[in-house]
Image (cartoon, rainbow, N blue to C red; front, side):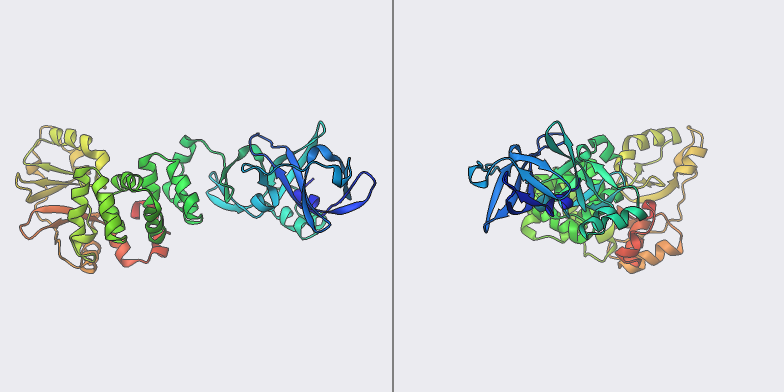
Length: 408
Protein backbone atom coordinates (compact mmCIF):
# COMPACT_ATOMS: atom_id res chain seq x y z
CA UNK A 1 0.00 0.00 0.00
CA UNK A 2 1.10 3.59 -0.63
CA UNK A 3 0.45 6.81 1.25
CA UNK A 4 -1.38 8.44 -1.65
CA UNK A 5 -3.76 5.46 -1.77
CA UNK A 6 -4.33 5.69 1.98
CA UNK A 7 -5.07 9.43 1.83
CA UNK A 8 -7.95 8.81 -0.56
CA UNK A 9 -9.75 6.34 1.72
CA UNK A 10 -12.86 7.09 3.77
CA UNK A 11 -12.87 6.31 7.49
CA UNK A 12 -15.78 4.45 9.13
CA UNK A 13 -16.51 3.80 12.77
CA UNK A 14 -17.42 0.38 14.22
CA UNK A 15 -21.07 0.89 13.25
CA UNK A 16 -19.97 1.51 9.63
CA UNK A 17 -20.85 5.19 9.87
CA UNK A 18 -18.73 7.36 7.60
CA UNK A 19 -16.63 9.86 9.53
CA UNK A 20 -14.50 11.49 6.82
CA UNK A 21 -11.29 11.01 4.85
CA UNK A 22 -7.72 10.57 6.01
CA UNK A 23 -5.82 13.85 5.77
CA UNK A 24 -2.42 12.71 7.01
CA UNK A 25 -0.52 9.90 8.70
CA UNK A 26 1.60 10.33 11.84
CA UNK A 27 4.79 8.35 12.47
CA UNK A 28 7.60 8.48 15.00
CA UNK A 29 11.13 8.78 13.53
CA UNK A 30 12.97 6.74 16.15
CA UNK A 31 12.97 3.33 14.41
CA UNK A 32 14.56 1.83 11.30
CA UNK A 33 11.09 1.19 9.88
CA UNK A 34 8.75 3.51 11.80
CA UNK A 35 5.27 2.38 12.74
CA UNK A 36 2.17 4.38 11.89
CA UNK A 37 1.25 5.93 15.23
CA UNK A 38 -1.96 7.70 14.21
CA UNK A 39 -4.09 8.93 11.34
CA UNK A 40 -5.37 12.47 11.02
CA UNK A 41 -8.96 12.75 9.81
CA UNK A 42 -11.47 15.54 9.33
CA UNK A 43 -14.91 14.77 10.75
CA UNK A 44 -17.79 17.13 11.52
CA UNK A 45 -15.61 20.06 10.48
CA UNK A 46 -12.89 19.27 13.04
CA UNK A 47 -9.55 17.43 12.91
CA UNK A 48 -8.96 14.29 14.96
CA UNK A 49 -5.74 12.34 15.56
CA UNK A 50 -6.76 8.70 15.93
CA UNK A 51 -4.13 6.30 17.37
CA UNK A 52 -3.41 3.27 15.21
CA UNK A 53 -4.59 0.99 18.03
CA UNK A 54 -8.14 2.01 17.09
CA UNK A 55 -7.74 0.84 13.49
CA UNK A 56 -9.38 -2.52 12.90
CA UNK A 57 -8.70 -2.83 9.17
CA UNK A 58 -7.47 -0.98 6.13
CA UNK A 59 -8.79 -2.53 2.93
CA UNK A 60 -8.96 -1.52 -0.72
CA UNK A 61 -11.84 0.92 -0.20
CA UNK A 62 -11.93 2.12 3.40
CA UNK A 63 -10.46 2.31 6.90
CA UNK A 64 -12.53 0.72 9.65
CA UNK A 65 -12.20 1.76 13.30
CA UNK A 66 -12.92 -0.35 16.40
CA UNK A 67 -14.60 2.40 18.43
CA UNK A 68 -17.08 5.28 18.01
CA UNK A 69 -15.34 8.60 17.41
CA UNK A 70 -16.52 10.13 20.70
CA UNK A 71 -14.93 7.30 22.68
CA UNK A 72 -11.48 7.62 21.08
CA UNK A 73 -8.68 9.11 23.14
CA UNK A 74 -6.78 11.24 20.64
CA UNK A 75 -3.08 10.79 19.92
CA UNK A 76 -1.10 13.46 21.82
CA UNK A 77 0.88 16.01 19.82
CA UNK A 78 4.65 15.57 20.03
CA UNK A 79 7.49 17.71 18.73
CA UNK A 80 9.27 14.68 17.28
CA UNK A 81 6.32 13.32 15.33
CA UNK A 82 6.36 13.34 11.54
CA UNK A 83 3.31 13.78 9.34
CA UNK A 84 3.98 11.92 6.10
CA UNK A 85 1.95 14.12 3.77
CA UNK A 86 3.16 17.37 5.31
CA UNK A 87 6.77 16.47 6.04
CA UNK A 88 7.79 13.79 3.53
CA UNK A 89 5.67 13.94 0.40
CA UNK A 90 7.24 16.19 -2.29
CA UNK A 91 10.39 16.64 -0.24
CA UNK A 92 13.76 16.33 -1.89
CA UNK A 93 16.03 13.34 -1.45
CA UNK A 94 19.70 14.14 -1.65
CA UNK A 95 21.24 11.12 -3.35
CA UNK A 96 24.86 11.13 -2.19
CA UNK A 97 25.67 8.11 -4.35
CA UNK A 98 24.34 9.57 -7.58
CA UNK A 99 25.04 13.17 -6.56
CA UNK A 100 21.50 14.10 -7.53
CA UNK A 101 18.45 15.72 -6.06
CA UNK A 102 15.33 13.57 -6.30
CA UNK A 103 11.75 14.14 -5.17
CA UNK A 104 9.59 11.91 -2.95
CA UNK A 105 6.47 11.10 -4.97
CA UNK A 106 4.96 8.58 -2.57
CA UNK A 107 5.60 6.56 0.60
CA UNK A 108 5.39 2.76 0.75
CA UNK A 109 3.52 1.15 3.67
CA UNK A 110 3.53 -2.50 4.79
CA UNK A 111 1.42 -4.50 7.27
CA UNK A 112 2.99 -6.91 9.75
CA UNK A 113 1.86 -8.45 13.05
CA UNK A 114 -1.07 -6.09 13.48
CA UNK A 115 0.84 -2.89 12.72
CA UNK A 116 1.48 -0.71 9.66
CA UNK A 117 5.09 0.27 8.95
CA UNK A 118 6.80 2.77 6.65
CA UNK A 119 9.29 0.81 4.57
CA UNK A 120 10.38 3.19 1.82
CA UNK A 121 9.87 6.25 -0.37
CA UNK A 122 8.98 6.17 -4.07
CA UNK A 123 11.10 8.55 -6.14
CA UNK A 124 9.99 7.13 -9.49
CA UNK A 125 7.44 8.02 -12.12
CA UNK A 126 4.95 5.42 -10.83
CA UNK A 127 4.55 7.36 -7.59
CA UNK A 128 3.83 10.52 -9.56
CA UNK A 129 1.21 8.82 -11.76
CA UNK A 130 -0.32 7.13 -8.71
CA UNK A 131 -1.06 10.54 -7.25
CA UNK A 132 -2.81 11.50 -10.47
CA UNK A 133 -5.02 8.41 -10.28
CA UNK A 134 -3.15 6.77 -13.16
CA UNK A 135 -1.12 4.25 -11.20
CA UNK A 136 -2.38 1.17 -13.07
CA UNK A 137 -1.63 2.78 -16.44
CA UNK A 138 1.89 3.76 -15.36
CA UNK A 139 2.59 0.29 -13.92
CA UNK A 140 2.06 -1.25 -17.36
CA UNK A 141 4.77 0.98 -18.81
CA UNK A 142 7.08 0.93 -15.78
CA UNK A 143 6.65 -2.43 -14.02
CA UNK A 144 9.37 -1.72 -11.46
CA UNK A 145 8.89 0.94 -8.78
CA UNK A 146 11.85 3.14 -7.83
CA UNK A 147 11.83 2.66 -4.06
CA UNK A 148 14.46 3.79 -1.55
CA UNK A 149 14.35 1.83 1.68
CA UNK A 150 13.46 3.96 4.70
CA UNK A 151 16.47 2.60 6.58
CA UNK A 152 18.69 4.27 3.97
CA UNK A 153 17.30 7.73 4.63
CA UNK A 154 18.49 10.37 7.07
CA UNK A 155 16.57 13.54 7.77
CA UNK A 156 17.79 17.10 7.36
CA UNK A 157 15.04 18.46 9.61
CA UNK A 158 12.71 16.87 7.04
CA UNK A 159 12.93 19.98 4.90
CA UNK A 160 15.07 17.72 2.79
CA UNK A 161 16.05 14.10 3.16
CA UNK A 162 19.34 12.53 2.40
CA UNK A 163 20.33 8.96 1.77
CA UNK A 164 22.41 7.62 4.62
CA UNK A 165 26.08 7.58 3.85
CA UNK A 166 29.08 7.20 6.10
CA UNK A 167 31.40 10.15 6.60
CA UNK A 168 34.19 8.32 4.77
CA UNK A 169 31.91 7.57 1.84
CA UNK A 170 30.75 11.17 1.64
CA UNK A 171 34.33 12.40 1.69
CA UNK A 172 35.10 10.18 -1.30
CA UNK A 173 32.59 12.07 -3.41
CA UNK A 174 34.18 14.55 -5.79
CA UNK A 175 34.07 18.09 -4.32
CA UNK A 176 32.22 19.28 -7.44
CA UNK A 177 29.53 16.62 -6.84
CA UNK A 178 29.08 17.72 -3.24
CA UNK A 179 28.96 21.34 -4.39
CA UNK A 180 26.27 20.54 -6.94
CA UNK A 181 24.14 19.00 -4.21
CA UNK A 182 24.74 21.93 -1.86
CA UNK A 183 23.88 24.46 -4.58
CA UNK A 184 20.43 22.86 -4.92
CA UNK A 185 19.64 22.91 -1.19
CA UNK A 186 18.55 25.59 1.24
CA UNK A 187 21.07 27.29 3.48
CA UNK A 188 20.48 25.23 6.64
CA UNK A 189 20.68 21.95 4.72
CA UNK A 190 23.77 23.11 2.83
CA UNK A 191 25.47 23.88 6.12
CA UNK A 192 24.43 20.48 7.52
CA UNK A 193 26.22 18.70 4.68
CA UNK A 194 29.34 20.88 4.96
CA UNK A 195 29.42 20.36 8.73
CA UNK A 196 29.40 16.58 8.23
CA UNK A 197 32.75 16.82 6.39
CA UNK A 198 36.22 17.34 7.79
CA UNK A 199 37.63 20.88 7.37
CA UNK A 200 39.73 20.08 4.31
CA UNK A 201 36.94 18.26 2.44
CA UNK A 202 34.45 20.98 3.35
CA UNK A 203 36.80 23.65 1.99
CA UNK A 204 37.38 21.71 -1.26
CA UNK A 205 33.63 21.41 -1.79
CA UNK A 206 32.99 24.98 -0.71
CA UNK A 207 35.39 26.32 -3.35
CA UNK A 208 33.24 24.60 -6.03
CA UNK A 209 29.98 26.19 -4.84
CA UNK A 210 28.56 29.15 -6.76
CA UNK A 211 29.89 32.51 -5.48
CA UNK A 212 26.39 33.70 -4.50
CA UNK A 213 25.79 30.59 -2.39
CA UNK A 214 29.29 30.82 -0.87
CA UNK A 215 28.61 34.35 0.28
CA UNK A 216 25.23 33.45 1.79
CA UNK A 217 26.55 30.39 3.62
CA UNK A 218 29.57 32.23 5.01
CA UNK A 219 27.37 35.10 6.20
CA UNK A 220 25.05 32.67 8.02
CA UNK A 221 27.87 30.69 9.66
CA UNK A 222 29.15 31.28 13.16
CA UNK A 223 32.35 33.32 12.97
CA UNK A 224 34.63 30.57 14.36
CA UNK A 225 33.13 27.99 12.01
CA UNK A 226 33.57 30.37 9.08
CA UNK A 227 37.16 31.11 10.10
CA UNK A 228 38.03 27.40 10.17
CA UNK A 229 36.54 26.95 6.70
CA UNK A 230 38.31 29.97 5.18
CA UNK A 231 41.56 28.81 6.80
CA UNK A 232 41.46 25.65 4.67
CA UNK A 233 40.64 27.39 1.39
CA UNK A 234 43.26 28.40 -1.16
CA UNK A 235 44.31 32.01 -0.46
CA UNK A 236 43.09 33.48 -3.77
CA UNK A 237 39.64 31.91 -3.44
CA UNK A 238 39.46 32.87 0.23
CA UNK A 239 40.41 36.48 -0.53
CA UNK A 240 37.79 36.72 -3.29
CA UNK A 241 35.14 35.40 -0.93
CA UNK A 242 36.06 37.70 1.96
CA UNK A 243 36.04 40.68 -0.40
CA UNK A 244 32.37 39.95 -1.18
CA UNK A 245 31.05 40.10 2.40
CA UNK A 246 30.59 42.97 4.82
CA UNK A 247 33.68 44.55 6.39
CA UNK A 248 32.40 43.73 9.87
CA UNK A 249 31.94 40.02 9.14
CA UNK A 250 35.25 39.91 7.27
CA UNK A 251 37.17 41.36 10.23
CA UNK A 252 35.51 38.97 12.67
CA UNK A 253 36.56 36.01 10.53
CA UNK A 254 40.12 37.26 9.99
CA UNK A 255 40.59 37.89 13.72
CA UNK A 256 39.68 34.26 14.49
CA UNK A 257 41.92 32.70 11.84
CA UNK A 258 45.46 31.43 12.22
CA UNK A 259 47.56 34.65 12.49
CA UNK A 260 49.86 33.71 9.60
CA UNK A 261 46.95 32.81 7.29
CA UNK A 262 45.06 35.91 8.36
CA UNK A 263 47.99 38.21 7.57
CA UNK A 264 48.41 36.57 4.18
CA UNK A 265 44.77 37.21 3.31
CA UNK A 266 44.91 40.80 4.57
CA UNK A 267 47.79 41.44 2.18
CA UNK A 268 45.90 39.89 -0.73
CA UNK A 269 42.81 41.96 0.07
CA UNK A 270 44.84 45.16 -0.31
CA UNK A 271 45.29 44.57 -4.04
CA UNK A 272 42.60 45.86 -6.43
CA UNK A 273 40.20 43.08 -7.40
CA UNK A 274 40.93 43.02 -11.14
CA UNK A 275 44.72 43.05 -10.94
CA UNK A 276 47.34 40.31 -10.86
CA UNK A 277 47.71 40.82 -7.11
CA UNK A 278 43.97 40.49 -6.66
CA UNK A 279 43.73 37.09 -8.35
CA UNK A 280 47.07 35.49 -7.43
CA UNK A 281 47.63 32.78 -4.85
CA UNK A 282 50.50 32.76 -2.40
CA UNK A 283 50.68 28.97 -2.31
CA UNK A 284 53.50 28.05 -4.70
CA UNK A 285 56.57 25.83 -4.61
CA UNK A 286 59.88 27.63 -4.13
CA UNK A 287 63.39 27.08 -2.80
CA UNK A 288 66.04 29.57 -1.67
CA UNK A 289 69.41 29.76 -3.40
CA UNK A 290 71.46 27.19 -5.30
CA UNK A 291 70.84 23.67 -4.02
CA UNK A 292 71.40 20.19 -5.34
CA UNK A 293 68.51 18.41 -7.04
CA UNK A 294 68.35 15.92 -4.17
CA UNK A 295 68.00 18.69 -1.57
CA UNK A 296 65.35 20.43 -3.63
CA UNK A 297 63.32 17.21 -3.86
CA UNK A 298 63.48 16.86 -0.07
CA UNK A 299 62.11 20.39 0.36
CA UNK A 300 59.37 19.84 -2.19
CA UNK A 301 58.16 16.72 -0.39
CA UNK A 302 57.73 18.80 2.77
CA UNK A 303 55.63 21.52 1.15
CA UNK A 304 53.77 19.49 -1.52
CA UNK A 305 50.46 19.44 0.39
CA UNK A 306 50.49 23.20 0.90
CA UNK A 307 50.96 24.44 -2.67
CA UNK A 308 48.42 24.88 -5.45
CA UNK A 309 50.52 23.44 -8.27
CA UNK A 310 53.77 21.48 -8.32
CA UNK A 311 54.44 21.85 -12.01
CA UNK A 312 56.87 24.75 -11.52
CA UNK A 313 59.42 25.20 -8.73
CA UNK A 314 60.65 28.77 -8.40
CA UNK A 315 64.21 29.53 -7.30
CA UNK A 316 64.47 32.65 -5.15
CA UNK A 317 67.38 34.62 -3.77
CA UNK A 318 67.71 35.15 -0.02
CA UNK A 319 65.84 38.47 -0.39
CA UNK A 320 62.98 36.78 -2.35
CA UNK A 321 63.96 37.97 -5.83
CA UNK A 322 62.99 35.50 -8.57
CA UNK A 323 66.12 34.00 -10.12
CA UNK A 324 64.86 31.06 -12.13
CA UNK A 325 62.34 28.24 -12.51
CA UNK A 326 62.44 24.49 -13.10
CA UNK A 327 59.69 22.02 -13.84
CA UNK A 328 59.06 18.92 -11.80
CA UNK A 329 59.98 16.91 -14.91
CA UNK A 330 63.42 18.53 -15.06
CA UNK A 331 63.96 17.72 -11.41
CA UNK A 332 63.08 14.08 -11.91
CA UNK A 333 65.41 13.74 -14.89
CA UNK A 334 68.41 15.34 -13.11
CA UNK A 335 70.82 13.45 -10.88
CA UNK A 336 70.60 14.19 -7.16
CA UNK A 337 74.01 15.90 -6.97
CA UNK A 338 73.38 18.34 -9.85
CA UNK A 339 73.15 22.01 -8.81
CA UNK A 340 69.78 23.51 -9.67
CA UNK A 341 71.47 26.67 -11.03
CA UNK A 342 73.00 24.50 -13.78
CA UNK A 343 69.68 23.82 -15.51
CA UNK A 344 67.11 26.31 -14.22
CA UNK A 345 65.41 28.53 -16.78
CA UNK A 346 66.48 32.16 -16.35
CA UNK A 347 64.40 33.55 -19.24
CA UNK A 348 61.34 34.18 -17.14
CA UNK A 349 57.91 35.51 -18.00
CA UNK A 350 56.32 37.37 -15.11
CA UNK A 351 53.85 40.15 -14.34
CA UNK A 352 53.66 43.01 -11.88
CA UNK A 353 51.14 42.83 -9.05
CA UNK A 354 49.28 45.80 -10.57
CA UNK A 355 48.92 44.30 -14.07
CA UNK A 356 45.31 44.16 -15.27
CA UNK A 357 43.77 40.69 -15.16
CA UNK A 358 42.89 40.66 -18.88
CA UNK A 359 46.55 41.20 -19.76
CA UNK A 360 47.48 38.42 -17.36
CA UNK A 361 45.13 36.01 -19.16
CA UNK A 362 46.63 36.98 -22.53
CA UNK A 363 50.18 36.32 -21.29
CA UNK A 364 49.27 32.90 -19.88
CA UNK A 365 47.60 31.98 -23.18
CA UNK A 366 50.42 33.37 -25.32
CA UNK A 367 53.18 31.43 -23.57
CA UNK A 368 51.09 28.31 -22.78
CA UNK A 369 51.85 28.60 -19.06
CA UNK A 370 50.47 26.45 -16.26
CA UNK A 371 51.30 29.27 -13.83
CA UNK A 372 52.64 32.80 -14.05
CA UNK A 373 54.83 34.40 -11.33
CA UNK A 374 53.74 37.74 -9.89
CA UNK A 375 56.35 40.26 -8.73
CA UNK A 376 56.09 43.52 -6.80
CA UNK A 377 57.70 46.82 -7.81
CA UNK A 378 60.97 45.65 -6.25
CA UNK A 379 60.94 42.47 -8.37
CA UNK A 380 60.27 40.32 -5.33
CA UNK A 381 58.12 37.21 -5.77
CA UNK A 382 54.64 37.66 -4.28
CA UNK A 383 52.62 34.81 -5.74
CA UNK A 384 51.49 32.98 -8.87
CA UNK A 385 48.47 33.06 -11.14
CA UNK A 386 47.46 29.60 -12.34
CA UNK A 387 45.82 28.74 -15.62
CA UNK A 388 42.48 28.16 -13.87
CA UNK A 389 42.57 31.79 -12.73
CA UNK A 390 43.02 32.82 -16.36
CA UNK A 391 40.04 30.67 -17.34
CA UNK A 392 38.00 32.39 -14.62
CA UNK A 393 38.75 35.71 -16.30
CA UNK A 394 37.94 34.59 -19.82
CA UNK A 395 34.97 32.25 -19.30
CA UNK A 396 31.72 32.88 -17.42
CA UNK A 397 31.00 30.62 -14.45
CA UNK A 398 28.46 28.48 -16.31
CA UNK A 399 31.04 27.53 -18.94
CA UNK A 400 33.83 27.13 -16.42
CA UNK A 401 31.87 24.45 -14.53
CA UNK A 402 31.85 22.29 -17.66
CA UNK A 403 35.62 22.03 -17.65
CA UNK A 404 37.57 19.22 -15.95
CA UNK A 405 38.69 19.92 -12.37
CA UNK A 406 42.35 20.34 -13.37
CA UNK A 407 41.38 23.47 -15.32
CA UNK A 408 39.14 24.96 -12.63
